Image (cartoon, rainbow, N blue to C red; front, side, top):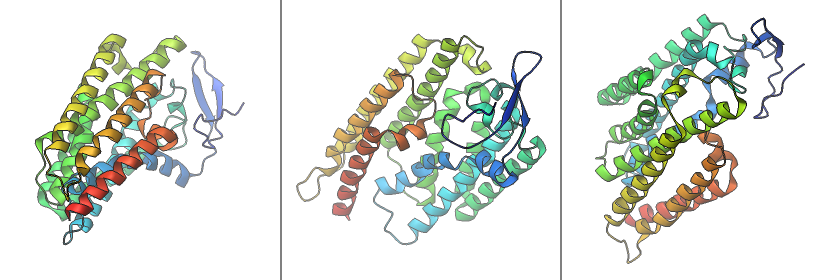
Length: 311
């Protein structure tokens, strides 16, 4: 039997029932280059748009060589993220083999040798740190902090959220621009929301399936996660409102305050999606849910109009 990946990727991996009742990959049909590409997770690179956020929020993207520096910082964090994914896939392979989707990851499926994945991860992380330091030495420090934070598994939600925050900080350092405290609070609370929703979706899936989940889920409960999600959403909306209204109107048009409407719509739509059981793959929600994408586009257009008017 050849299982089909739920995301539509053609993986064509044969599986068999092992002695312990689990699934074990027995045939790997993806070529090596494809396995390496899947391990790098290019879909996840959309998260690194946060690197551009700080410079964009300050209206600095059109100044001097800021676009080049921020662009290089974005590339560096794509390298860092892909390297960490490869290393984590080696560490998490035993648990991934029990997951209905993650068991198709190349390392867990036996398509990519763990030693190759580890070398790939180290090479990508090293390249990301070197590129970051080349842009600005302080950015190199942020890159090292990002890698270190992602390796501290015990922090879990804090580590996931911290990864998003450091992406935004990296953009500010690369530009360089001063980051508003309210902007940092918006990114932090929104990142906590995404991280908690991820864990909530995974916990719900394992409970419904009646199977054991990843060890990190043992410290969570549904009620606690709902509280974290509600609290972080409220903080994100409040902080965004303060940040938006703190910017003076341009030409009599309150462009920045107007962005509160699509921002709130994004939060509301995301909340609806995670209540229905989604949220385990936030980047897929943004790419596949047309209403969430529409709200994001409207926010981006209104925000860009404000930045253009200010320039």
